[in-house]
Structure formats: structure tokens, C-alpha cells
Image (spheres, rainbow, N blue to C red):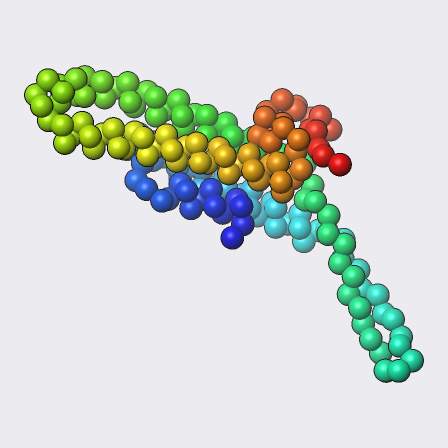
Length: 167
């Protein structure tokens, strides 16, 4: 499975709070866009065919494939958008959680522990999914694109030439 596709897997693994659901559909669209950009950059990698004649056989074709790291210039803006959307998702989760404060207080006062437990589970699962998404994006940036700073390397660079790459 593609590392970018694993972001979609995380985002669809559990139900999100209602106010965050529109952001998840936006995230899915951005991930699909980044995946398509990654595939197109892989297809544009250099591939050459060399024909080598072997005296013992008629003709042998050797396919030489030179794989290159995908050009980050194609992916960087989309990955920045995904990173920004994950930050917005976290901010919206915080707003949602703060808006539920009155309900949580009421449930505590009326001894409705089951409702309190359910909303805490939803919040904890949402935090876990957002952190997982950020971690997967950071791993992709670090290992697939060779960005030294991972996700942090995306945000600080205004021009593609400013992105720090390993090697």
C-alpha cells in the first residue's frame, strides 16, 4: 500500500465528530491529488531500453530502469495543504471539545457516566487519528521524498529550492 493511501485508511478507520466530517472529505481529495502527482512523477522517472547483442543467442533486450526520487516540486504544495488541513482539523477538534464542556459538566452532575465515557472515547480516538495522520505524513516526507525535516521542512520553504533534501 502506498504511504499516502495509508492516510486515507486512517481517516476512514473510525467515525469523526460531525463538525470535522467536511474536513475529512477535503483531506481525502488532497490525498488523492498527492497520490496522482506522486504516480505521475514516478512515471516521468528515467527509463531507457538498451539492446545488447549476445553472440550465443539471437537478440537480448535488457531494460535498464533508473529510479529517481520523485520531484518534490510537484508534491510540495499539495503536501503543505495536507499539513495545513491537519492543523485545521486539530483546531476544529479543540473547538468541538470546548463546545461540549457544558454537556460534559451536566452529565457529570447528573451521573450519566456512560455518555461522558462515550464522548471521551470519541475525543481520544479523534486525537489519536489526527496524530496518526501527522505521523504518516511526516514519515512519507522524510523517507519517500528525503526531506530532512519531515513535515516541518514543508512549511518553512516558500520556494521549491528552499526545501532541504538529504543526500
